[in-house]
Length: 389
Ligand SMILES: *Cc1c(COP(=O)(O)O)cnc(C)c1O
Image 1: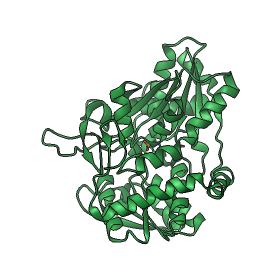
Image 2: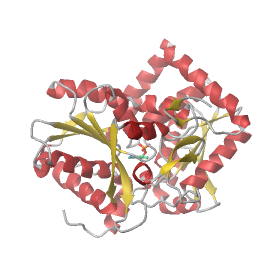
Image 3: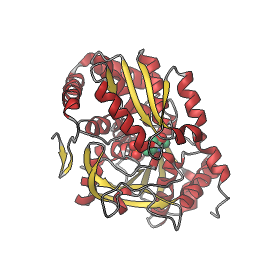
């Protein structure tokens, strides 16, 4: 059943996918040991993706919090505007190595679809992106971006016509076309070996944080904070710090104040199987997957990566949830104090980080992963009434 994180993870998939998952795992292990692959991956990370990204001291936000120093890990500066390219680039190279000329992907807000389309164009692979009809209507600019990058966007008309159905459609396509096609999964979720591969590809974030915090303030941070949707930017931040004494905090979306469950899977879900893995799932008493709601499309998912489920149970990582209004407030703080428009996903993490910094002495260092930039969210932010800061 594949690798486990405690009881979590595994590969609950139809028989037809088992050889493809085994091939992917084999290719991954071979590629990691191949100096030629490593060199090409490193080159593209540097000159195409724009890594390493800086660790930036947020001076005025630190003053606002009035406690520990707040540092931003600038994944918003990665090509495409978010950490998603770290994963898409690595998996695109694996697909090319397997000789698969076609990439498929699922997307909700369109960010992962855009990252996949970027990689397909750069590596000469064809790309088809499954997207719910509702999401296509509300994420027009990203749909246009994908098309300009040469990808085909496939509308999904079943169910609620959003991300969950898009994932199911992509899985069906993969089952039918597995010999020619790589399913480029967008977060640290799904059947083994995806959570492991995505976590390792995103761990470049945490490795750079280690190096950069030693250079900037002579040691590792006291606390690292990241937002959790499927959990890829968070696990990439946390993994290289797991064996240190740095405290780790994952921040989920609590959704609208006074609303339902939001999308706080770890805070309010319970263990179950979704999209090929055993992890926490937001589900009702009968095990039906619940509808989620969040102001940030990238956190709006009823599942979460299995390693986070394990890290929560073990107590090594703390998880909390921030409401929509907190994320909107943090968006404005970062814009007005620092000159940075953050994506609404990491705005949840910024809000929690400011609260943590406020309770800590000035000598402490808090690092927040700023997973993406906010250009995609301007309409949502302008549509919301101005919150009091
Ligand atoms: C997609 C997205 C997320 C959520 O995905 P994770 O896999 O949890 O990292 C967070 N931030 C941004 C900017 C995103 O685009």
